[in-house]
Amino acid sequence: MAKQSLQRFFNVYQQDGLTPYVVSIFQGFIWDYYCKHGRTFPWRETQNPYHILVSEIMLQQTQVSRVVNKYSEFIATFPDFLALGKAPLRQVLQVWQGLGYNRRALALQQTAQKVITQFSGKLPADPEVLRQFPGIGQYTAAAVVTFAFNKPVAFIETNIRTVFTHCFFDKRELISDREILPLIELTIDRKNPREWNYALFDYGAMLKHQRKVIQKVKLSRQGCFRGSNRELRGQIIRQLVERESIAMQDLIDILNQNGERVRRILLELQREGLIQTAGDLIFIR
Image 1: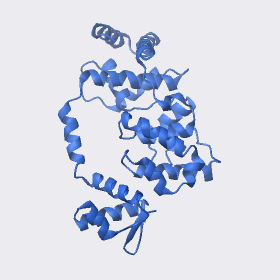
Image 2: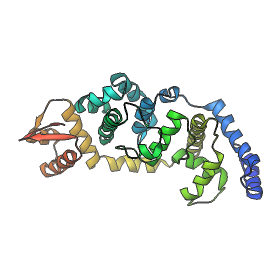
Image 3: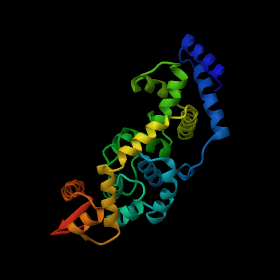
Image 4: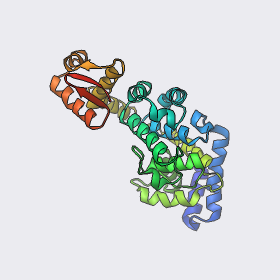
């Protein structure tokens, strides 16, 4: 929406409130942008609940560009809940390499096993039920229900937040999600909530791109990752998926890290259910 048009929209909204007319204007320019500039991703071309769940778990804290190729590989290797649930964890983590946050892979497999044993292989369409699954929080549960089952469930993520702060709050700062959520609920396109939220995603992504997020923030985040425990955790998992097992001292030597630090992280990974030990040997659970 052009700057002048946005200001006119905001003035009407301020004067009349969120009337059906204001909602129709808002929906109109979001749909118009999406029709002209909507992005294409493989998980947008399916309504398979398993495929959509995989994409949503992968997209947690991970850039879309990193997920695109890995998603296709993962689905090809584990085409359904049964295949994923029965696979060795080492194989799951091997395919997952490159996405980071390996606990998500474990949680996804545990979810697949729960779907098989407790829900006859069918993913529940209730966000409150989904929130009881490993690795599925409020946002992921709502997103899966929306995209897999086309249900009009309101949720907030970074792109959607950007759209509503930009369109409904003019130049205000420090806007809470509590203020935004009612607007999201009242403006949902209930005939097609799946595509509507894709449209919000893409409009928000455009707005963020226009603002050119400060580069030094990105560099700072990358710097924090380098040398962090999260990086070391990923290196340990990578070593373990490449071999059946490895001795503790060999792992420490390969990583060229302080032995005590490596042992602490191994204890974390063991508590999380990602690895096991047998004497001095370490291997994927």
